[in-house]
Amino acid sequence: MAALRPSRRVLVPPLCRAFAGPGCQLAPERGAERRDAASGRVSGFCPPRKSCHDWIGPPDKHSNLRPVHFYIPENESPLERKLRQLRQETQEWNQQFWANQNLTFRKEKEEFIRSRLKARGLEPRAGSGQKATLDAEEMADFYKEFLSKNFLKHMCYNRDWYKRNFAITFCMGKVALERVWNKLRPKPKETAPRSPP
Image (tube, rainbow, N blue to C red; front, side, top):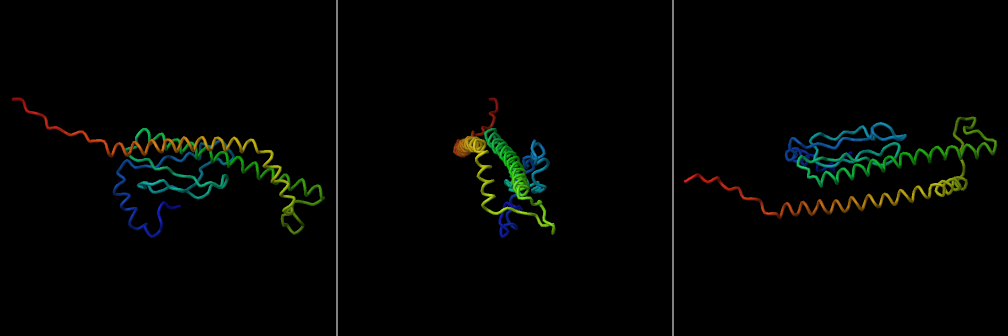
């Protein structure tokens, strides 16, 4: 898990730590809050405390998605906080959906293989201990059936995924405009207090 290429590692982290300031922190990981089969932390990796970037972790063993540890800047504006929270909620929702979907897929696949082998009069494990398998054509039947059965679920997932991404993109545009406005806005001049005559 790395935010930087190895060749830049030597120079960039010290600079990052120098500019990060004491209030720099990463968003807490919420893997423990998931209510699905993939309980517990999504990843055991914890980025350095002084990191000033988002970090992408190794794939989750249940969802196969890479979790993101979100960086929280010290002077995060309310709009930036809203964007980060939208991204975190979307990541958690996505992790939960795919962890549950993959669990369902594996269970149904095992049941399909077991029922086909039983219909042939075969055991799931051969006498040598090797796991019995089905050919590609038989598995194609399972994949087609699984996709057909879950069509509506996937359609709803895709609709929600696009809604969430449009909301995130819109919020990112607002954050970018806010940053440009803050840079271009004239700074209030500090005036020295006048002494009484």
